[in-house]
Length: 183
Image (cartoon, rainbow, N blue to C red; front, side, top):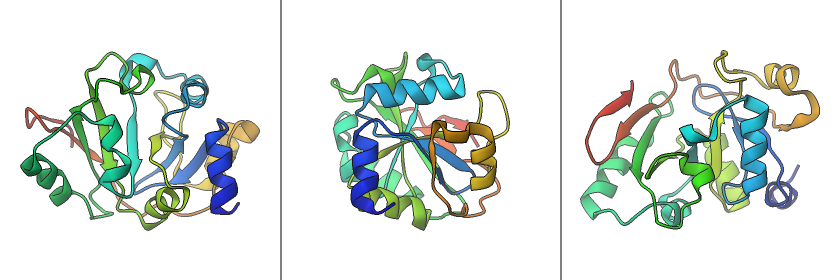
């Protein structure tokens, strides 16, 4: 699927599985409520938990984020870039950020992907993507495209590729408090 048809697929509510730094993720257009609800339904994940948004550059995430200082942005940027150590930040959500992304939180989880495939996917489609583990809630995440096809069948479009080989999922840290929520 070329970039133009993939963008159309995502804008039309399509859901994909794609390789990230450590596992395969399920993704969609974060501005498409029906697509996000479809991911939550496929996974059996409650909306209240919120979701991670991934991109290849911060400008794709800005619309979802409340204003932050230059030093806060620099802190985040300093953590991004190593595919073996992915880093996700919890940041204040913009007032207009959809609740289907934030769940019951006033914040949103964001990451600039250091995986060349994921970054290229965002760059080529010109959009950030929802990034949640490719699994049924509470079960082990898929690490290959074959596992994704077995888990989800024709419910989603599985993109072929390999993870970056990171041993653990991304560290998650709250930008405002400094608290690490997942290491």
